[in-house]
Length: 474
Image 1 (cartoon, rainbow, N blue to C red):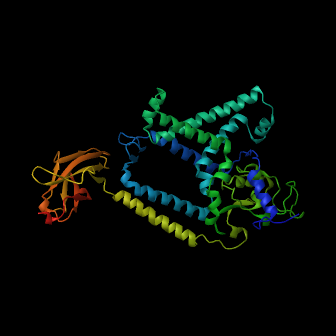
Image 2: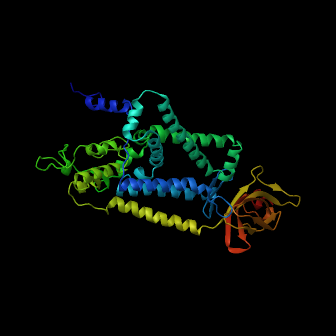
């Protein structure tokens, strides 16, 4: 009997949702597939994992080429040194990542998910290890159904041992981006790692082992938000992986020698190979589904079957909804133009800002323990700490000056300030003013820092000078 819930939702639909939410997980055994898209995925895995595992070991001018030194608040990327004052660049970088995701999704679907997402990349590696220990799809299914024996325990134990070692290596490399990896490796060999380093290595290893080894498609289907909001970036001209029902239906098995057209059959022989190779276990013939990660494994499997049947390739292919329906396809459309233009302009702006930024920073901190103090000579004095940040790759000598406050005198321990490459130097400074020269209780002044060996290298920062009430105090 059909009906509706109190919220006017059909009972059948509500029951289906409940079954989907609380259904017991069915383990998926993806079949290994070969083809052009499988080759592209393999190349992507090698390139991305190569970058991840190799980059921390590369050196640049006697330092790690990529290092996010959180305790020192310094971030090194190639020849650039970034400091907390450069946080704006991180903001723009995250915006660029979001725009890139929007642009490529609207243009070519879930390329990120299928070829570059860390979940996909590490799962590919874990599945490769699994196949080496347990064999192909049929053997893995048979092994899981078999009772626990010494052989099964050895196979499963060996697989998990390799998974854990690989996951620990992944966690170690992750920490190596934040702690000099050479020093980290030396202390690891001596069993002298600190508690936080040990925690993060173990935590990231556990996350890799759990996500890529156990959860796999569950992460993509239930945990990743991208699968839920991708439809907002799709339209009928977005490239997707689609089955052509006009060519494939009605489906049915047959021998290669049979004239399937005469029997009223489509090109699909209902071999289910597209389902068997799918890492999320869906049937692409049911249409576009949010579980599809765009890996194109079903395309390779279907093309191989079409080749054996001597049918044309492309029953399952990268295409658009409009193309499947025989309608014109528009690559340039409003959303792709907007996303592409914003991405291009922002990328050019960020690149220009990074290349043109002055490798010198200045922060001025006024001593807050006292508003001001009077010297024995009757002068008003404020105390400051100047943070001179040398973001260049070589040492510089700087001269510190003040401006904007008539009659003010700057007192430093040394006339010149020497700051090494990538160093932040705290410089104590005192500013004295005759109270008769103060117009207000709070006045503005500017600190200027100039490199003696490079006239174009300078920075300035405004500060406040506090004193007694204005001249009426005379």
